[in-house]
Structures are given as structure tokens and as C-alpha cells.
Length: 420
Image (cartoon, rainbow, N blue to C red; front, top):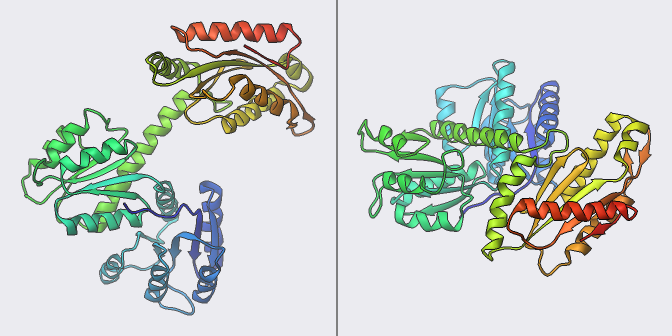
């Protein structure tokens, strides 16, 4: 397995300070990355030598006042920093030379759209950090070449020499997002592997790119019909390979974002009721089979109407946003935090056995009560009441009903407390 650093620092080497600052500002504003700008080779070397800087990527101009293009490219490569070339000139000879050096990509300074493409490319490379990919090929040299190309783009790469050996790796790492497979392999072909994988992994969750050197014009259609997302005929250029990989990974990201937005409350970023019931019922079913433990909490903001009446509905929205953000920080990805309705939050927690559920939520209550919320013109504090159902029941609705009864008891007994 090959893996890259999780650094969010980027080196930009550009002799035009005005252009460099514009690109720097766009990257930092749109991608939340930290950009160090150098306008000369000497300045770039100083930035790289500074131990505080851990650059995951470099964007390089080839025209510098104190170095040739190849010199700066070679230097960053010796420091294990993959480069994107952002230059005003490019010919076939230079293109071949640079691809042989294993660059990330090149972008021509042709028009404003070039900067948009550059930002999209940087976003793609940044998003690839930690994304798992699996290369399946019986040729060791081909596996190594493909793995190296993916590693340059920051993938965490696994390898298998045939389809039969790929399946256990997928079983062990179900979060693999990209699979590159040759077709002509012993034991299990790429087509057979693709067909088998699609029984467990959907096309919008795992991108499969098939490869073949047979020259059979029907093989690409066979791959697509058996569930592959894309196909490449061998031999292919590095540039084409990256275009296909980036396109497929971008598509997975877009689908994930659409799914995520459909599952989230637009104001708070918490899950919505539809997702809560869809996933909550699955988790409860697993709990009733003895695989996990679950508990449900209903949380309500005390005197929320007074917040709206006194400070305005915009202030009420800010309170909900701040509360949602605090709860997302406190609970794990395995838990479901949902905006249940109005100022009411429903939380399903998983596998907190061994910890007191009451103590956990009482700690949440205390933290909320002690937190000052900034509404812009003024600052306020809020309290919450919480009702718990700490044991799995036959249905999720029954657990919510019990939690609701406990929430009512908390409010009747003075608010700002937890009942179970």
C-alpha cells in the first residue's frame, strides 16, 4: 500500500506577482488550502527548506528570472513534491519531457478558464487524500506503473495480481473508491471481477475502470455492460489515464454531494427526518439482532420562542446553526444527529454501552448552558432539555415516543435537565 501525507499546504511558484496573488487568493478562498507564493527559484528553495512547510503539491511556472523550467521541476521532484505545470508555453517535446518526469498535470495560461481548470485540478488532488484505490493486474511492472501514477495524485493504493486476490482486499477495505483492473488475468478476469463486485458495490460508490490490450473492439462494451464506469485500451497515455480517473472521481464526488444535500437540513447541516428514519431503522434492526447497542435522545431548546420574539428570527436561525455545529462536533460519524422539527433535535447514538448515556447527555447539556452564542450585535446563552430512551425497542417510533415522554417530564420539572 502506498499513501501520501495529509498536508494542506501548497507551493505556488510564479514570476508574475500579480497573477500569483490572484491564483493564491482564489485557491485559499475556494479550496481552504494554505498557499505559499514564490516569485523566484531562490525564494521557492527557501520555502521548501523551511521545516515548518510540508507541501503536498506545487504549481510551477516554467519562466523564472533565476532558473530554467526543468531546473525548478527537478528540484521539487527531488523533495517529493508532485508538481502541476502552469505555463504560457508548451510544445510536444516539452510535454513528453515533463510527463516522463511524472508530473501531476500541465495547464496552459491561455484564458480565464485556465485558472478555473487549475483550481478544479488542485481540488481533485486535495480531495484524493486518503481515498483508497485498488490496482489489479497480473503484470508486476504494469501494477507498479499504475500504482505510481495514482500515488502521485495522492491516492492510498492497494495492489492485487488477479481478480481472486482483489476480492479479499475489497472485503477488508469496503471504502475503496477506485478500482483499476486489467482484463486478461489468470484465475479471474477483469470482466468476471467487475461483475462480482457489482453484487456488493454500486457504480456511484466505487468507480471501476477496465483495461485491456487485446484490441478486441467489443471488450469495452462488455466491461460497461458488466458494471464498469469506464474503459481504457492499452497502451494509453499518462495524460488520458489521469483525465479518465479525475472525471470518474469527480462524478463520484458530485453524486455524494447530491445525496448528502438531500439527507441534510439546509439550515443546521444536521440530518433530516427522512434520513434519520431510513438509517435509524437499519441500526435498530442490527441492535435487535444483538450486533450493536442504540439509544435515542430528544433535545429541545428551552424558551426558543422567546429567543425569536426578543432577538428576531435571524438570531433564532443562528442559534440553531451554532447548536447543530456543536452537536456535530460532539457526536461521532456513527451516530445520527437529526433536526427533528423546529428547535427539536433527535439523536440516535450507537455502541455507547459501558458509558452512562445519562452522563454523556448531561455533559452535553452542561456544555450548551455554559457556551455563549455570538449573534453579531449581542451574545446570549441558551439551555436545553433532553429526554432519553436508553434501551432498544421493537420500533424506532416507540423509542422516540419514550424519549418524547421523558423530554416532556424534563420541561415540566423546570427545564435544563436530562430525564430517562
